Image 1 (cartoon, helix red, strand yellow):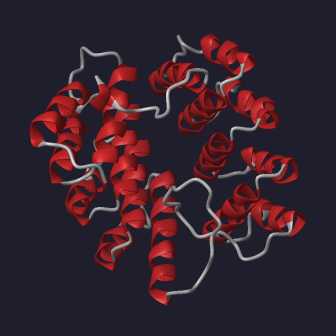
Image 2: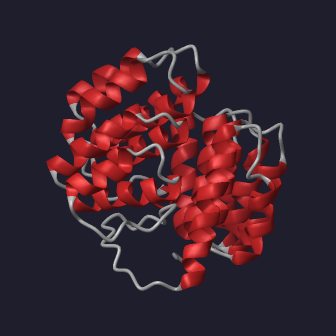
Length: 298
């Protein structure tokens, strides 16, 4: 983590918490705080959970999970327990608790295994699976080229055909299907990416949203038609459409920019805001900037 004085952290936090600032600026502030880390950065992020943007709060929880700091656990538990928070925010809080990897959160995750919001319940199932896997202390070289803390480890096999069968098997546990997903991602071939894209037709909205996320990490143009199809489907879960938009922003071709501009005024706020942030990502991907979010230089 970068060492930054408290005054600078609070200054960045004030950008994050300023509802009058453009959302893209607030996102850059958030990811700068994630990169800095530490108690002051966590507190700045915590203050923002009062915001009315579900997209922003979802990203707050994601960043707290990626930071893997135990100090964030009480914050994330509170968000998961708050039924007034949007489902995608509660889901991300549960996933973040799994990402931090402390077994002390098992009881809270078990409590919400039967949550009426299926995306929350499924996330708790996967997070518990990750904690149980950590307990086993299995040795596994995950070959993750993205430095992300993933909801599950990858599967052991690297055979694309085998992995696709597991990925698309609705009778398999979500934990194992996620493992197949991350193995396919790590292979980084067009064959594995097309296998992943088939997952955008899975029955679980949570599953489809994670497929879109990993396609965004891969940034391969062959996935654009699949992501665009789900984004354009007004009947699709908004959590999935949001992730498709952000994935298109990461790929950042001219066709991605054109597609995203179509949905800047979408009826669903989270989709509209995702397109706004995704277009900012496109601008970064097509610029000489070294790091997407770095308010320390300003």
